[in-house]
Length: 394
Image 1 (cartoon, rainbow, N blue to C red):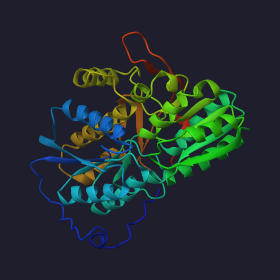
Image 2 (tube, rainbow, N blue to C red):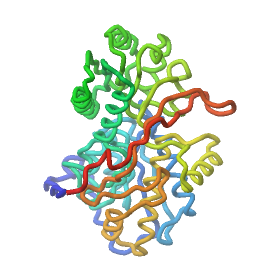
Image 3 (spheres, rainbow, N blue to C red):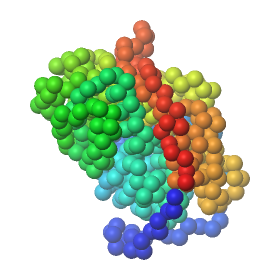
Image 4 (cartoon, one colour):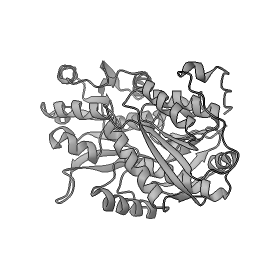
């Protein structure tokens, strides 16, 4: 794809007069990375897991790249896009050589305008909006994780294979959630699955009982629950009180993993199905090494958020190291052409036409865990090949 030029407006005027100094030509004394992620608010649970994954990626290489110590600075976006832009602006002003961001696609789309203008690499391991590596993409933004079209393709195909006839949708009321649901409805219709109702819930909702009751009474045999973070816990805990997973086939994007299952409890979790960005049972040498390091440091198995954050950051740092030079443009060129033969999920290829990682897709269902392990664990029930999820680059 052709990356659009950044419109020449004054960032100083838009963001409170903060002026970003020009990048230094010589190699500085540290490799500065700013993690601009939610560490509080509705998505704080996700951000904390992302931070843990990145920490392992840095520690496994002795905290260095290109012979320089890595300085990792974390900025809490407080689950707010406005705060995310402010924190990213500050990080760039302080000389970050790489920005690692975000849960919210809206925040990522805003931040990547800043990093693209400043020619600073941005590593995205969670935000899924298609525009990030599509219409709004730029040379310096890379995504190493799933896209909305990937997620929708898996949900639609899973619903079909589960013989769902009627679907009800409960969707987080923000732009990406609405856009995802619009596209998913069209896919479901193409598969002969009727959508019989929908509800849009504000982020941070405390009471899902009324809309869950409407979903159950709608006659639908499937529920697409398109919410994330703390809202998943709230919705499925309340769903457990009415035995929701026994009444409908509940499915969604990043809807369930062991971390969320622990917070929700078995009543609301068992039987829930979800796309998985990563799972700790993946049988690859790198994943086994990562899981061992994560358990040793944090005393638990890594979540999908931690796994994807680790994978993206370790891939980026290894690529930077491979160039053997302190040159951002060469780092970017190398990453655009890179193949990650030993990612935690197997082979990943960076699509140079859009800076998007081409990879397999995982879908899992929550089941009771083994004795001595988590009460709820994910069983990978479907693995979709990359060829089924990505069209060839033009």
